[in-house]
Amino acid sequence: MQKKYQHGYIESKTSGGAVYELGVKTSKQAKAIRRIAEPLTEKYWRNTGQSVFQLHRIYRVAEYLYKRQRRNK
Image (cartoon, rainbow, N blue to C red; front, side):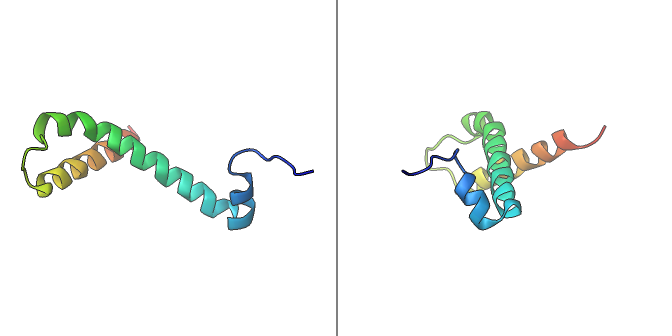
């Protein structure tokens, strides 16, 4: 009979806890940045032949805003 483990249990045991936690933290950070960048892309970058450079600039602004939210006040 095969045991059932919770999601991510085997990965955390085989790859080391720190590596797994870092992956989860990075994933959550990327998702938060995408969430911040979404309204900016709708407003300033409409997918109508504009350069990708503008899109990268929007994502850099979103990263700045994310880091600014996390600062101690």
